[in-house]
Image (cartoon, rainbow, N blue to C red; front, top):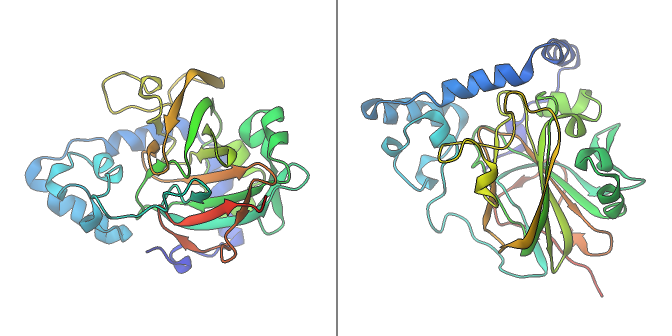
Length: 306
């Protein structure tokens, strides 16, 4: 399980210098180049030693993977591995929202004045995060939770609750890091980076699941709409495509039904998920706090008192 100490404490002068340089670089192109390296096929005899060394270096647990190391033909294939059956459990309760990922919480709390806390002394506009003022207003006064995924984590994103996907949106943007130093020093970071937003309408009202891309990541695929991933029939994604600079909204009629625990998106390498809840619909679990390890399926919030 991740521990808070796995995520380094910011070093202000060094962090600011690195982030200043990255902000001036072609982040999308560099991330796509890194992704190409992660996609390089590994000959079968090399898979176990190479992927085993990677797993040891980042602290990933291959024993939780659906397949043996020799079955993953590239680093990206291992990074986006599915879990073996029974590796995680779900509450299977329509009144509970569970963690959609493994990771460590960033900030948790309530959206106030249309803004959510990013880090101590920093907040960001929820309307800008969603790239939609009306949707931003919908979540004002509601609970939110931010979860950071490190390279050691499982990187598929699952539905935190039952719901219908009627609306989703891809918002192009920067691909700055989303680690602790960046979160502490980059203003409006989550609302600046490229992201894929999926809305679930169900027993807990509308829940926004926001997958935020990052440097050396930038690739997020949509399991709720495989046709959105391009090119068809290949290991593809919605975000960080060369030449795509405009937001795209998808509306589904009929809507896509998902159950709690269903896979809805995947990070091809790691990043951050922001969950947003409508006001008055849920209360965060009393023990939930910042810098807390969470696991896929762990209850994060429950329906409030009627």
